[in-house]
Image: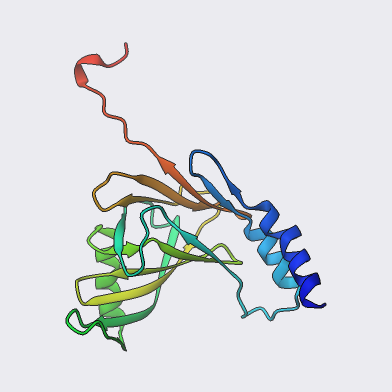
Length: 189
């Protein structure tokens, strides 16, 4: 298959099926990406990716955090930990064990860790996300979503914007949500 045929196949299976609504919801056709992956003859361990840039995303800016979710809905796998020197801007990976993984997980689940709005979604529906645990410690994690669950609520740092990420088994979703404020004196009867 030449490059032109590959582009046509990608358009048919993937690009033409990406949806973005006027309200900001984005639907990525993971099943189409997997079909493209298979038709290209890629090995099982080779991955294809979508790049999903969330609103307010800027390079190097960690300004989102995750809200509460069910642990059974999303599995966190930390694949890399790194030290970031705030004075020089240099970073370096370091080895980590179960104690640090548990500490990182607690920070993620307690909404103490911020993440970058530049997310990579693979042909299996997993999200690759970078988190800053503190000013100088970061991790890269794979989020594996259990299909047909509520996924994860996410919030912009100042809670000005909220959204949800989830995977239904065939498509990966980013959908903005809204906070409603109801004055207790005016509840419907």
